[in-house]
Amino acid sequence: MDAETTVRTLFNLAGVSPPEAEMAAFIEGYPATRASLDLLYAVPDTPLTDGILVFRPAD
Image 1 (cartoon, rainbow, N blue to C red):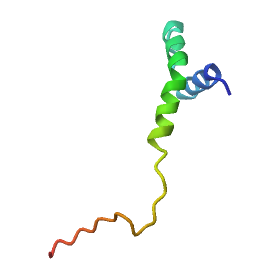
Image 2: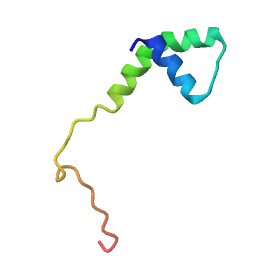
Image 3: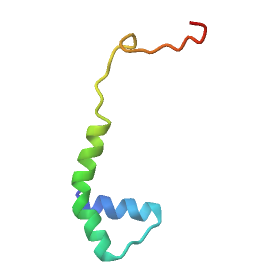
């Protein structure tokens, strides 16, 4: 799906109708925003035993 279709669909699903000038800005910025969000959530899997912090109030 292209950026325009995606952005318009997301706004439609949210029930929001921004002015066309704002919609054009959202459409233009969507690919960079999507790429940034994909990087934010692209955390590599780690084994459950690595880096676990344990809270022990009695220590």
